[in-house]
Length: 513
Image (tube, rainbow, N blue to C red; front, side):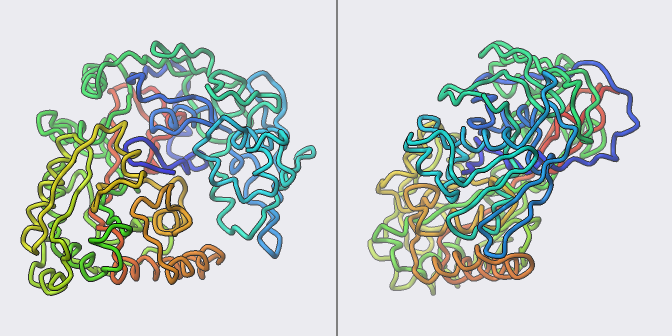
């Protein structure tokens, strides 16, 4: 499941703007620079960081691209995918349905601990694969160009969950360490991977799809010492692209907007789905069965000040809801003040509900996150809450937040893994995800039922139900303080053209001018 600083929405695997660059010349090699720590794996079953996902996307022939929309049974338990002909791996072997059956079963294989496995647990026989009883789920059937997936219960958003699944050779082993170089069916394939040193990605001359691909390949240098060095090398023209955390782009000393403008030549900015907020620990005495205090905190938080402490309007869009504006079902309700706190309303709601009057706040120990926490501390002091701040290094932070620790408020970033409200509202607030992604341990029988019922709907009824739930959750239950949705920044050298952002970069679509 998605965590803002370490994950990315994977839906770009199937959606590039084909017309934006079709007439550009092909050829040349794009120079990429990254920190090795930002590449966790090039194996689609294990890849989960932003940088890795963008690299894997260059090699991925997704089920969405190869098969399109599935035929769905009336009970929403059987999905039949008919693969298009013409797709071949980089070794010339044709892509058949077994390539996707293997992709699913590798994700479920024991010892793999794939971040995508939770989305496959509804498949009939998935638990037998995870237990090591069988190498393939009985609900996954492949024959020729037909893939059938049977589920234990109706899951209308199952096709959306499958958008990130890439064709892999049917004999590809399931290795807990990952298989990083193998024949791929996407626009490119990994020709060489030397961890900590370099990655060579080259064009798949057998690619059978119609997604844009112009250059001969990508030379990836994994030896950058910092995100600042990544951007420095791009600005000096020593590299063409690299990934860095958003705050590095927005450093005032870098002056990227002043130098390049926005969405004009080298610096690009697109509204993203990355969310920042503060979750209440509903299992602790302070906020348990205390919606009045949770609402009070929402009125007391100065969202605009928090954004100013980051990068200002160029960095993000403030919000008081959990669904982003681009998500199907979103309805703008304006529940809490976005321009500044309403202490009068906050004090009225907090009166008689502050209990111990003390709150422990967990956050990341980076300067921006600590500045956020200090602002929250100052705001909540004005409604009678004394906040203690405890920071943790980023690698350890999410384990602390997910454990049954004593915190009352926790900084929570989030990016949905696919473009459906389930990937936000259900995974964050349904009680069945406690111990996983429901870090606030919010467990309401009423909302569990509403969330699960919405998940069973399809089409407009589904999105209408989720839109209403988003507003109701934020206004009445208030399990979290929503702060903002981050913009996605990208910087290129002068050589790069054919930029496709949806909002995440389709690296395979770029060309050289």
